[in-house]
Length: 258
Image 1 (tube, rainbow, N blue to C red):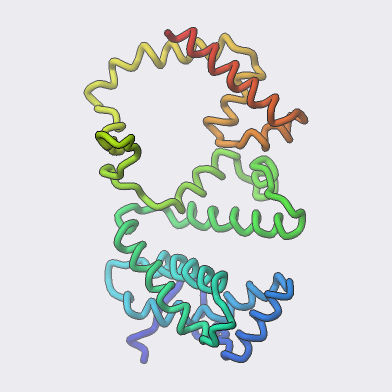
Image 2 (cartoon, rainbow, N blue to C red):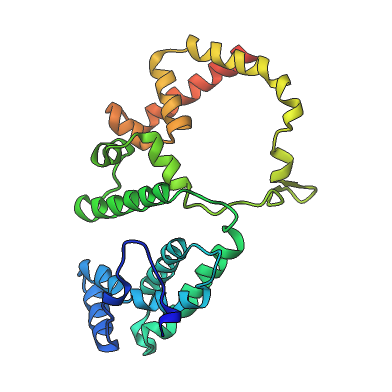
């Protein structure tokens, strides 16, 4: 059996708990009745199910730490969608979902390498957001996440982007019934980049000419990636006001760079 051992960094897989079918059913009933801790117990108690799937991929060239994270996502999806009324075991329902997530990752995402530290930060952010939502009943703002985790707001967007699936340059992004526009069509030609230098210079000058408030709102929206609601809450104004300031600032910039 040692040939089938799956090594995961920082986890002693031999000591992972494995829940029985009866224990799983009891936890699902508790979850349905509002016990939020039951979901975490279901996840932690079925990690060996993920490992059993990963044995099929435990060969040279595959990062098992990454596959384990992906497999856990499949397990969570299985738990979120599991229906006791069908009288199935979680393993029967969960294995295909876990297997599907892993195969999808290997097919679509294995060529994109993101550092482990960035992925760990992304999952840390997601855990904080989930805990905050459970406690406060709303999503935390980027500034609250940054303050709690001791990171910058830019790092939040960068880390969460690492979890997104890569997009093919041949992905269709628009079709009005005629010719289809593909992502490839929107990628700049490096040879043509010099033609855009005048535009960048004009943009830089325009940003200096709008008010500090307008500039900060545009930076928060389009560089840091905050929502209008988050900005409104931080500035103690309405979302409608943020929207008006944003639109006015964009209109000023358009006129100045024409």
